[in-house]
Length: 338
Image (cartoon, rainbow, N blue to C red; front, top):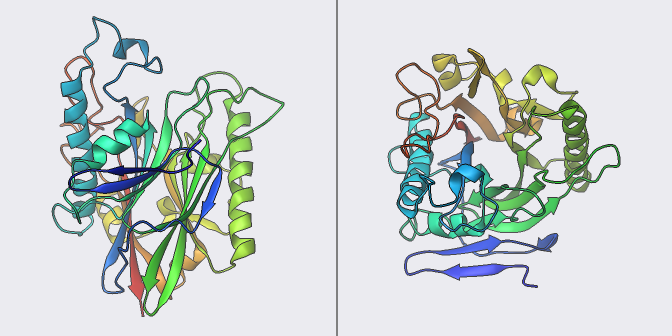
C-alpha cells in the first residue's frame, strides 16, 4: 500500500498523504517564511463537503436520482471554499487574493476534494502540501491540513476505548511544517481536530477521552522539544467552559487582540438563538511570550458573504446549492517579533 500519493497537475503539484501512520523528512515544497511577513492560519468546518462521486459515504439527501447535489454544485462549493480562505486572510489584514498559509478544514469526504481544490490555483498561489487520512469504517468525513510550508512529518491517531464505540470517530491528525525563522529553521506542529458532536448519549465521555488523547500527543511533542510551537485547530463541539484544564496551552477566545475586540462576536456557530465558541485554536504559550514568533491577532470571520443579513452564518443549503457553512472560519495571525 502506498503511504504517499503524489498528484501532478498542469499548474500545481500536491502531495496528499492518505494512509501510513508516520513518515518523517517529507519535503515537497521549498516555500519558506520570511521574518518580515505574517503567517495566516485558518480553521474551518466546511459543512458536509462531499465530492461529486457517489460511493456510499454520502448522507441520503446527497445521493440518488432525486438529489439536488450535482457536479456543478460541487464545483461551486470548491470555489466558495477558496473564497473562504481569501476572505479570512483579507479580513485580518493580509491583502486580497491570498490564501491562508495553514488551512485546517473539517468535514472533507475524500482525497478527490483535496485534488480538485488544489487544481483551482496557479503555481505559487495555492498549496503543494496537504495531509489527509480518508475516513474509514462508518465515518463520512475526515480533516485536511493544507500548508504552504514543507511538511516534514505527519501522523494520525485513532481513538480506542472499551467504554464506548469508536466507530465513525474522526482521527486526530498531526502535521509538522518547517519555516525559516530569521537565520534558523523552526518547526510548527499542527493538530487537526473534529471531536464527537453532542448528538446522542454520553457524548461528553467521548470528548473527554478525545481530550486525553490530544493532551497525550501534545505532551509527546513538548517532551521531544520543550520550545516547540504548537497549534491545535478545529471543531471541538464544546465551548471553552466545558474543557478540562489544557496544560501549556491557551485558547484564542481568551485573547484581547485588535480584530477580535473589534468584532466582539462570541462564537463561530449559532445554535438555539445564541453564539457558541465550539471551534477553537489552542496554541503553545511560547506564541505569546513576546519573543520571536508570536500570535498577534485572531477573529471569527464574521463578514459577508460568510454571514447572512441577520448576522448568522450563511450555511450551505442543498435545496438551492447556496451558502457556505453553518460555521464561521477562525483566523489567527502569527508574526515575527524581534
